[in-house]
Length: 574
Ligand SMILES: Cc1cc2nc3c(=O)[nH]c(=O)nc-3n(C[C@H](O)[C@H](O)[C@H](O)COP(=O)(O)OP(=O)(O)OC[C@H]3O[C@@H](n4cnc5c(N)ncnc54)[C@H](O)[C@@H]3O)c2cc1C
Ligand SMILES: Cc1ncc(C[n+]2csc(CCOP(=O)(O)OP(=O)(O)O)c2C)c(N)n1
Ligand SMILES: [Mg+2]
Image (cartoon, rainbow, N blue to C red; front, side, top):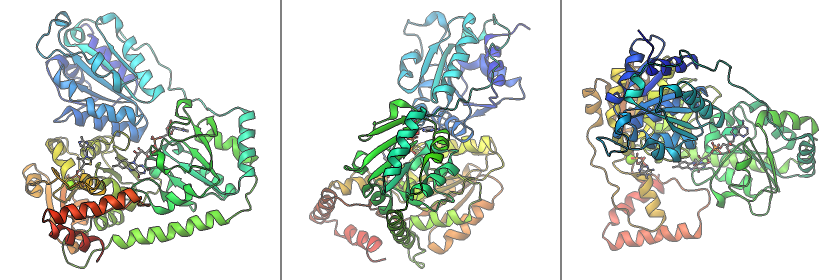
């Protein structure tokens, strides 16, 4: 039988090492799914919502650093991919999206399900093109894949169903070379300038981010030479925090006070591979030096006095031999002492609270951290689960942590767990889900059963959109539109063929987490956690404090005094 364009498309993906495609089938995708059906080396992961497909592919790409693929049928099918693709693109993970298109002879007629993916996905991709002729295959697909990999982000090909079904002109993939891995570093002159200014500084703080992946050893050597505390940005946590005697925690609203002060009290701030977004957390008077692989990142978040383009590992290797040992140790000592105190304060919040209700969510995260496997993959929903993950999960160089940290979309954790588990069937994958986030894409609970993915879902059930409630309170607004009338998630899980569990008291937390983790298959544990567990920022501004008392006043005026007492009980009297 003659080779079709769809067969050639699958050939190219296989040649590039793609092992699975996440998606939902549809008429316009028939050529492609039919070709996948006949190959043993590539799996079709049938999810229930295309947004899940995109998040899952993003998780696979993040964990493997290789191209991952998702697909949607024409019109609404691929439109559903969009939020997940934004997340992948903004997190700079290489993902190819196949957006099927309506019949080519109907384009432009306002036909059934007609949309224009080239326009729709333009903002969340580096490359987005229509394949309207068999002659364009495999070249356009290969350009798309190469772009996603080399620029790190999303590439989209849009292909009408009839074009995929046509006879292929070319018969095989064109490109056969392995992915290039260049070393990028500043020039010798620039390395000398950088070394000179660091050798002249006494109080240096390092702010590291996800760009430090693979440069752990160099980073620790650097901190030791400079006697510099290391603060990390959230996406850098999994690469920086472990085996790190210079660790002083994270900064930002969810951060540790020690991270905040180490940055604010330094003379020289050295940023390496980070795009930490919050301007108000940067020091005003320090000299700021930034190293990033991408020149366009320099000076994006704060003023920068010296900017260098380079890969973290290669740059630090070139720099280290030129650095003197800093004799000034006080800055590091003070920062580490501060970190010890901040850590103690946070640990004190992660207690079982005897056997009274409700359960502290910090305690749940702490127990999860203690019982999870040494190479567990955690995903956390946007909302308070992000806070608990940032503060209570211990990374060790083998564990991984994924969230929607840059795009900040709810409902990411279950979809990312699906991608993680499909990629690593033998590893423990734990989703820390909010009750709001979980319900948003709950249909894909069914995917766990269908694809035999033994994901462990821990649902932080606080019957609210608690993170937003917190933001409203901090802004002095009465919370509104944040309450959730939740179902019994345990029963829903059981109905979907999972092990369903519920912890109502602190004493149930540990045995039930252990039971869920041990279970040979997917499991959901809902934990009834307190709703108003404040996660105070490291510095409380006058505005925030003012806002808070305003909330109290408004709440009392509205006759919600009970809640204020609850709030005090949870946060002040424990
Ligand atoms: C609800 C919520 C609250 C949050 N609160 C906080 C908070 O309090 N604190 C916090 O830190 N974050 C917080 N975040 C996350 C925040 O939005 C950012 O996503 C995060 O701070 C960015 O981390 P990063 O700089 O490590 O990673 P990225 O944003 O991914 O930046 C990585 C940088 O490294 C560069 N790079 C990549 N590879 C290399 C290389 N090989 N060598 C050199 N450079 C390289 C990239 O070009 C990029 O500039 C929050 C997120 C959510 C959802
Ligand atoms: C798709 C989307 N919708 C809305 C928001 C705004 N938002 C941020 S956190 C949050 C609440 C999350 O609630 P839940 O999952 O229950 O977690 P909680 O904070 O209650 O632990 C909302 C609505 C968002 N970030 N993404
Ligand atoms: Mg909630």
